[in-house]
Length: 310
Length: 245
Ligand SMILES: Cc1cc2nc3c(=O)[nH]c(=O)nc-3n(C[C@H](O)[C@H](O)[C@H](O)COP(=O)(O)OP(=O)(O)OC[C@H]3O[C@@H](n4cnc5c(N)ncnc54)[C@H](O)[C@@H]3O)c2cc1C
Image 1 (cartoon, each protein chain N blue to C red):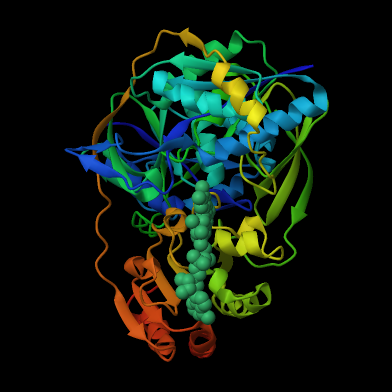
Image 2: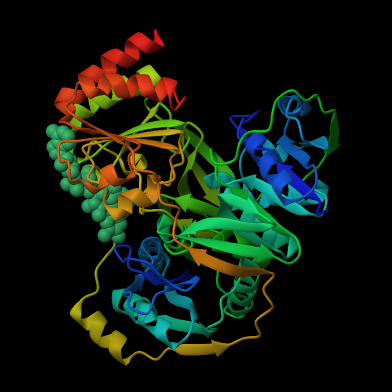
């Protein structure tokens, strides 16, 4: 059996639930994983103890983990992570870490895995227009797309052992610039509602924001919206030259569904499209397609959701 | 005076239709372009040169067909163009090893690359190369300012962070607010005449091998509705059928 190691996904200082999906991926690749939790305070690792399927949990404790620095994290984790296939989330930060950690061990990294079968790993290539299946000879670091693998059950109670570690931090944070709104970023959200050129004006994004706030969702945008309106920042852009997202639910409003937009969101678990043009390509990818203007559909969506969530 | 390197990769045009021939993608009929994020890396490298003086060297890995992407970089304004000659597909370990061996011979202080290549979407090259060189790295930057150190902006939980990056460093560039310059006629003429510096290297064996390419699994046809009133039913289904809200 191949030894596997899961590096827990840490978001805002806590173990993120996607870590349970990484355990499922590890079990598909080999034995029960060692779950390594990068932390400044070992109690953070308690957040992983309920995941069933872990062989043991290692709280890797270091000041290095207070801010993300690729060199520091890779060296501090390398020092305490056993040999084997290492699995991390395919979040932007963890993909970066995975690449550095692999290079540090002189092994390869396989990014964005969405399927594991008989030891072979499949990832989307060409922005999801094709899939690539690879085999490994030897160890590797593997990143796994969120919301693809089933989460391991959370009825476990694995003991946590603590190990101190240290690493060489290369960069220094000067300042954090919090987003003006408390709404999630598209890269962090499990539900995204995005607007395109069909929204007509940036002011109309307020209708999307209202629904986002009802659902705890993020607001995204197409490139046409970002390029046309200064008020829609590039940080909201989903697609080939924006962010790649894998939410549970993606609601596309007034977006035609150009191939470069699909590149960023086609692997969403559920896709809803609202567009007045029945022939818009986005409908070919929608689980639920509504042919209507947003002016007609959004108020009804908003009021139904408000009632449901109340 | 800075010795600046930018990594560029030739990829299928993002509009291209990808087809299979047997169990491998067939790119023979596909137009190839510079990977979009690499355009931001080239622009950042040129801005770095304008700020500190020095030279920009663009590097790609590939066969003779990849010279085109170097000529494109030359037309935009880089000084030197280098192709590491290798046509075999490489895993991240082999690719980064050969890049590191060539780059360590160039006494550079900074390497820019795109945040990921449009073909694999992996984003492994920048951070992996930095680790091999023992350099700092920062990824997905949306703004870079030049000085003794670099001051960059990258996304971080809840917003953005401004980060000081000591040199030498590898920086992988996202789009941000950067506007890329277009080649001018003089640049295009110079690019035509420019010589590609071709390097041959020993290529370490790959431990990740491609088994097959395939088309993405077809999504079952979704439900479709006419008229905005259906939004109420869809909201219910999102809860009761899809279980996502
Ligand atoms: C190299 C490259 C990279 C790119 N990267 C990206 C990227 O990262 N992200 C991205 O999104 N695009 C990207 N694009 C651009 C992409 O090709 C499309 O141009 C873009 O996605 C179109 O945005 P849109 O759907 O908002 O606009 P349009 O294509 O103009 O579509 C607007 C839609 O709104 C609908 N509509 C109009 N009015 C209403 C109404 N009242 N109610 C409901 N529907 C309405 C219309 O029927 C139409 O379908 C890229 C292109 C290139 C060449």
